[in-house]
Image (tube, helix red, strand yellow):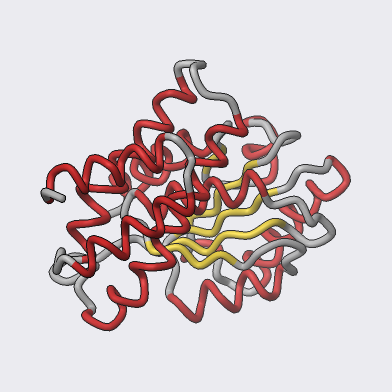
Length: 220
């Protein structure tokens, strides 16, 4: 199979939400001697970006976008170990680091997973803590990896207060100015983000990527 054809099939596997195919194509690319970064940047990233565009235009719905994110994750599961061996992914450039998770008391993670996958696909270094994450764990991980962003997700109105509590914890510990804190989730609004003193709010995963890029441009 020609290289360009293989890269095109990788893109299609993500657009069509086919995790098994994406994983196998990633392995095939490695067997052919392609660089992991080339496989990601030219094969799979165009697929996840296209899926995001289709979702924004209303041609894809949440299940399709989740499937595309799962395909991207399957490919990354194959490629990430090779990237870590070579240290090639971030050579010569510094990526922003993101710590993300669903707040304490909430176990929903589909939206958070999608944001994490799209951020990773767009070149961010993502540390996903999963669901039901305490303020202490968010802060400890952010300090450990020297994060640029902390993303707090919630699906429940009853756990929105956990986002506020985390920001209060940052202030109490003197770390508020160290991180950009982003909030999201079904009940979250821009007004809520402003009320609790967050740095930003995004309505969806595609918007979250754009917001991170925008905030990066605003940092000195």
